[in-house]
Length: 246
Image 1 (cartoon, rainbow, N blue to C red):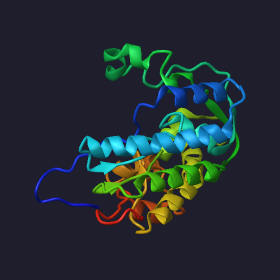
Image 2: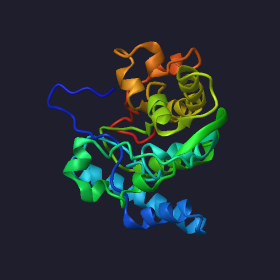
Image 3: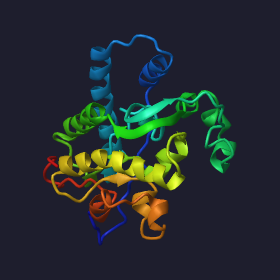
Image 4: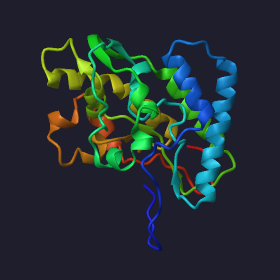
């Protein structure tokens, strides 16, 4: 992790507002409408490059891809975890009663991208099926960092607890068993991010990674299969200030 004795390094939570045209594609996919995948892929890479440049221009030290390749920082698990089906049970947005949502209703209303995403229910063993999308995210960030010189860069990833909160369990005998199954499946994503970083000390995973020191083992979703990843996780995907390679 980059340290500074001169000043506090600046960063952010990871997810940044998506451009309108990227949100239009998210909406089209959710509604089952056709999407020109080749054109979208080119636009996505361009948008990631733009948001990386903007963060650097604004003076942000530790940057990311804005999570532009994901419909939202939580609901992206819909397309990356297997063993789930569309959940017809109506559920309120998890942010509906938050102070932030009440302060900014125009942002967190029905028009907010996460508010439109389908919730899923687990009906079979949880598996990971998102390697193709993850590779695209990693490749786009690496391309955007080519020639750029941020202090560091990171790749956010959802934690098992956030995924379990978003997707309802309808298969496993207990919530603990369900949480551990999600953790074991997401291990593939965490390991791929660590491997892509080239330094074996990253993987930005919300809640479980940042709080594993204070949460009980079962609450964090740390299993024997994911323990080594948690041990190496430090929220930052580090890149040298003199090189953009990971």
